[in-house]
Length: 315
Ligand code: SAM
Image (cartoon, rainbow, N blue to C red; front, side, top):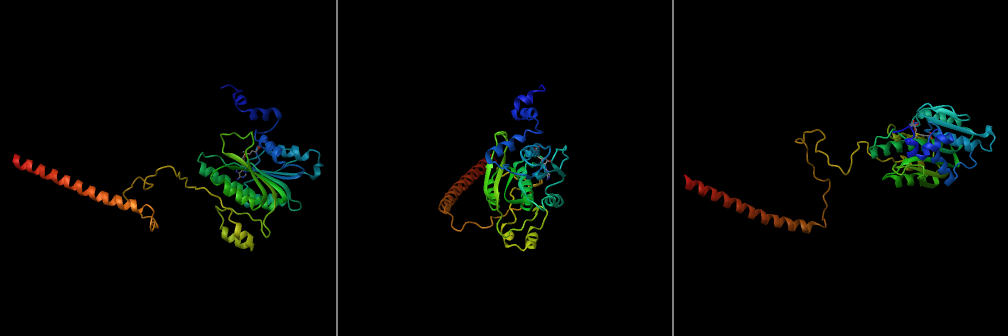
């Protein structure tokens, strides 16, 4: 394959190089902004999971345009080191960790951010349930940070993997934002389950106390109790779904996960139906199989007697 084959296959990859963006992802944010105007009149922004930095470049271009540079504040955070970008403050850290969150929060003590964006993606395993689960953990961390730093009326944009829990996620985000849309920009490949939640007009429930929670590690109930907020008690934990055991509900599995099936203990269902609609059919089948059973037994008996008679005759 030649050097230019990717340029032919991926128009946004080619355009990014031509137009000076660090990654083709820049077009996703540009297209989301074209539709939802999330960056209009914004001067303070947070870019979570920002490396290599094309979304920060978009922020920088939009926020410094027609603005006094001393008003603009852009914070970019990523696990990986990122080449410097003029006018963008960088933090290297894990957004699911409290100390990274605290560093970001400190920058916005006086004036809150007007937009938080998160294009975070874990290394994809290819197992959709696990990918979706890890992605939702990132989203949860991003949302927790957002509740600390976003000004009322602000916007939040984050990558999601569309799956069976998308409508649940939608309802949960609606608790915090007046309007939530799920969008797929033209530059996001159709073959990818990636989409973006665009959450507008941040308006948390009255009495909600922002808090960082990692449901994988924390005692969620205890943390929620500490806030003394009835609202938090009702809406936390923000439920993330998925099954880390990675079971595929369409597959067959051996009875014991080890090879030895002989030790498998069969269990009845927890509660059988008391009067199932199919009971009549079951009764009919039972009578029928009893009759059939009797016929089969007679035939075996006949065959056995015949064999015995033949044997006696030969002797
Ligand atoms: N928006 C970026 C751009 O336009 O250049 C691209 C982001 S890239 C798709 C996803 C990024 O998420 C990676 O750089 C990865 O290091 C980062 N990431 C994944 N998990 C993270 C975490 N827990 N904390 C911080 N960054 C994370």
